[in-house]
Every structure is written in structure tokens, then in C-alpha cells.
Image 1 (cartoon, rainbow, N blue to C red):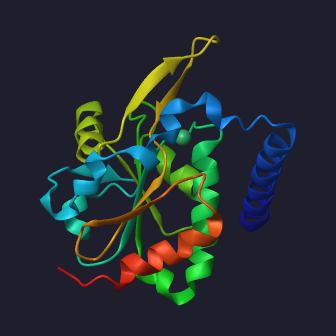
Image 2 (cartoon, rainbow, N blue to C red):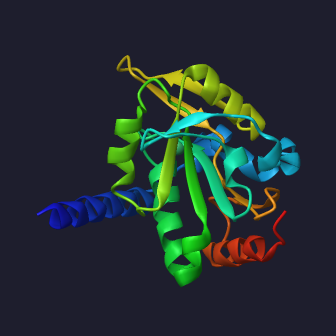
Length: 209
Ligand code: NI
């Protein structure tokens, strides 16, 4: 029952994305903030080992990037209400994990929310259950989320919608860290997908700290 419901929702999401691509609703040119990842410079100096953020995982644990040194990691920012870029990123990551095969088990994968008001640990857990099971969600107080975003040189801001609700514009792209905690590369949404897995493999081959 649960399995078929899950498959149904994944299929629904995929067809919705396919539809958006087909009708040209996928206008990432309208989302300038979401194209920043390829051009950010501060992130180049990012070092997980020198960070001091503490957030709450979707499983309720208090963790931070400094705890992840010693193995390769993927880090990205987003939120569960994101209509397009985040679900697309999560589906891409599922593909990459498949491409990595057994090696994927060595990877840490972390989604930091940019919407701490709505993304509680429970909401993150529920959302992530639709994607690769190995992705961890992180949330915290608005201050904690702010500090984490700053450490990764990520920008985000709430944008009111006409219906009174809000969405969040945010830096997109997946940061790839080697086991030494240093940034190895960024996988941009617009990159050719065939380069994603080699980028991750390259990070995995870096020496540990
Ligand atoms: Ni998003």
C-alpha cells in the first residue's frame, strides 16, 4: 500500500515536471537567485571543518557540517514548498546515487531548509520520504538557518505571493565536498547531467583530512 502510494506520488511528480518542461513553464531565467550557484565565490573558501553551525535533522538529532568531515558530502539549500528547482534537484540526486552504485553509500547528503518557519523536522521527514532515503534534512531557528546559509555563502529571501502565502528564492546548486571537508565542485542545475557523477567521484578520491 505504502509502496504503491509512494510510486504513484513519484510518478505524479515526474509527470508534473515533464509537463512543465514540455510547456516551457520551466523558466529558470525568471529566477535570478536560483542561478547564482555557478557564480558564487565565497563558497570556494568553504571548509566544513571550520564551521560551527548546529541544526536539527529530520530525525531530531542536533548536527552540523563540522561533524561530516572524513567522508564526501553533498550539500544543498532548498525548501519543501519549492515548486520546481528543489524537487528537480532531489530527483537528480536520486539519479546520481544510482549512477554511483555501491559508492553512494559513502556519501553524506544534506538538504538545509531556507524556510524554517514551515519546514519542521516532521515536514522534512515526510517530504524526503518521497526521494532517496539517504538524504538528510536540516532545519532550526531562523537564526540557525541564517548562520548556516552564511557559512555556505548561500542567499535566500521570502517573496510574498498574490494569494497571501510566500515562496522563498534561494541559491541553487549542489555543493560537492571531499572527505577533507573542502569544496570540490558545484553541480549546477544547468550543467550537463553526464558531468555530475564524475564530479562526485572526483571529490570521493580526495585524500581525507
Ligand atoms: Ni527550491
